[in-house]
Length: 351
Image (cartoon, rainbow, N blue to C red; front, side, top):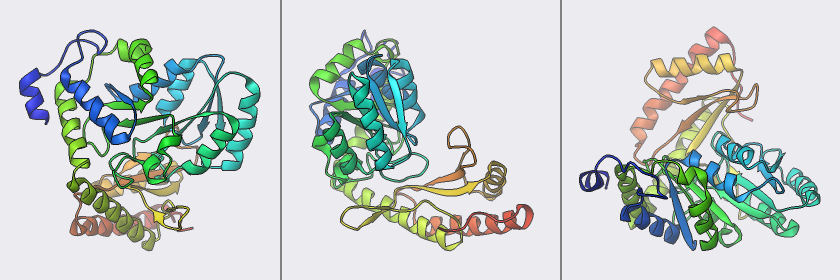
């Protein structure tokens, strides 16, 4: 774990992965991540943001077109900008808009890459990956999925939305961060060995950044091994159960929460990202403060993290939350809502 790595290797490595900054610990983590994700190879970056920037900024060029969901994480857009590829965005999770965008992208000439979040970081909904993969295949586009909020949560192995939806073999590249379910810091890109090797020797953000510190790598490796053990399956079930519990309770209180994602087999998935939609930024700030003062912390999401007039409070549950803890938080949500509506007016209700 983190402590063992710290004692063995020290606090830092003082070099990039490309030079003196690769330890056997980094290589071991890459091998285990590739096995877990079912890919040929994997490459570990220092942060999640750097992973997207370093991947997209390297594999794309000015002659290419990259198609992104409007709800994609900012690091995806930053990587696209760095690449100087033509960027075409489609409305969030709208397959008809994706299809039209792919038609235009095909006419651009050059390669086409579609990049989507597996679980979207503010809405908490799951991308319709089977339908997206089908359209990518039809139009000859590659597909990359950001599994930041899905790894260690979704799928029988916890390998993310691609596993849950049965499209692992149809996704070309899969990215994930270590700062969510794995409780560490860093990022990984996984896929074909030749692509990973190309990134290893060409990605400037990979080459010119100090490597992930031993404690973070050691902590991540331990977390991956827990996820791949029988305990991991128990944790996946527990965190999803807690998400459903909180989602249902907040809806019953009259909050507008994100809708569950309905899968092809009719089952509904509520991810650990449970948003409360407010809309007005000032109302969102007042509600956030009322919760904070009572001892509940949520993330306040305002523009540019969300569209204008799309302010929301993002709640996140963990597998280690128990029902008494969640019940205490739910009671505080009820108190804060009453105070807010008395002082600042009504909030959006369930849809």
